[in-house]
Length: 74
Image (cartoon, rainbow, N blue to C red; front, side, top):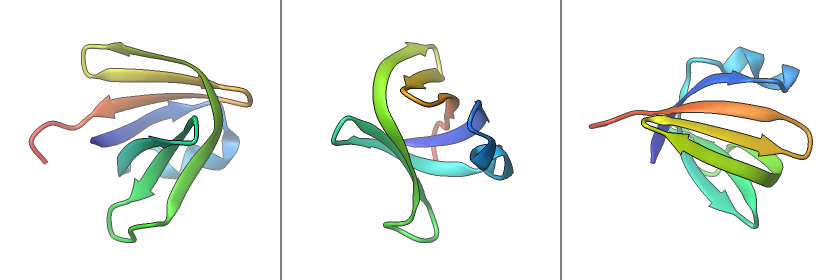
């Protein structure tokens, strides 16, 4: 699914806020793959909690929290 990174408590992610990424889960972690470079992107620590409210996905991991927005029709 395509998502836009809205925010994160991980300071290393700040430069990627606003980017569209391909979101999927692998081995209990969230993966945010770059659209123009398949196989490259962000992999989080293990997901502890994930909630969806409308088009917003909130992910809590051992080390950080992420807020993603689903991108429709792209």
